[in-house]
Image (cartoon, rainbow, N blue to C red; front, top):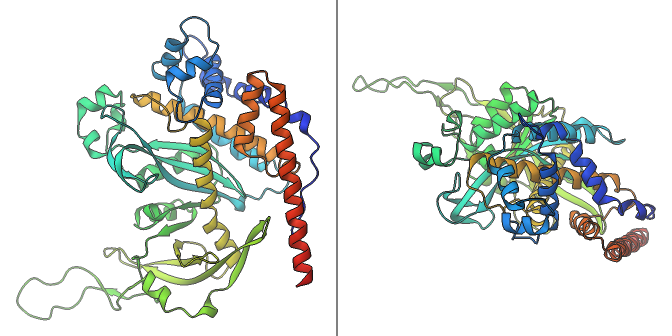
Length: 469
């Protein structure tokens, strides 16, 4: 049976969201400190601009139009984001710690439910001068396009997800071109080419050093298909579940690795190890599975009934062709209802001690990361910036993360009374408050309550249907 949400009780509190946003940003006062002043006021203004400005048009000119800044507002905002000396990384580290603490303060918190999910996101851009821009794969449109690509870390707890770290991927055409790096203001120590898994490892280490406890790490096939990230997480003694591609080779039993004896006196002697059995692709393995090997587990309750997942697991081994021994992993294959698509993952959990429900939960949590990207882009202008320099890019991302952390905090706060409260609802109410339009705020709250009542009716219908069955 699904649990009905409580009746709305805090409409008056929702009318204070704009003030609460200001208080939220004030908590990060120290992060905006420079040698001569504090840039908090401009940080407040920039984030208000992100909330107020129309999606897709959050450039400096439009932000300035929405802000009430004394003097040359455009120049002040431009200087704040491009030339000021406040530290984006310090702000990001603080956001990570505070988000972790927020989750830990909830009554239903368990560290084991918190995932650290790695994913990348592309930002489509024109020209060739913006830092890191190049023709590269853009997942947002599914093809190669001129864009910048960021690697991001999201802290996910149950149905809540927010971004807590980032790295800008620099293609080799940038790292091998000192002039482009100089023009974009890329620090000398950041000009070494790094793969996206290497950037992910950097973030994980940085957040551990920042005091963020990590239960397990997740990521898509880009991060799980090779050996680099998984081996690094093994060395850090961190649990992970990483997606892999369908052509990943596995061994169903531990292979014996040895250098074969020469078969002839002629030619060079063999020097490389070989396995005594042939590996199998995971998609080939999946096709041979019987239907009874796919139990169904429940992920969570939804409005129209429980959300379920079919799952198959087994102990397997993988080998990079060089190491002295193959590495034991747990293969996880999942399939959603009414879908023919399979998702493959590898994990380093203890196979004998880890339940199917646990593995299904970990595998499914990447869904919430996509939600975080959607909210950051659609509601907060994550991709709308028009900056070219290294520092400006990181500062924009840090400010978007700060605003996104506020949205997550408020949704957690109102989860009981307004379970359908969305980031868009919060943003539109804040706009109405900043524009001093009480009627618009009241209308938004009425819409929330109407949706809430409809959800209760949906749950009641589901419960009656189940009772009849």
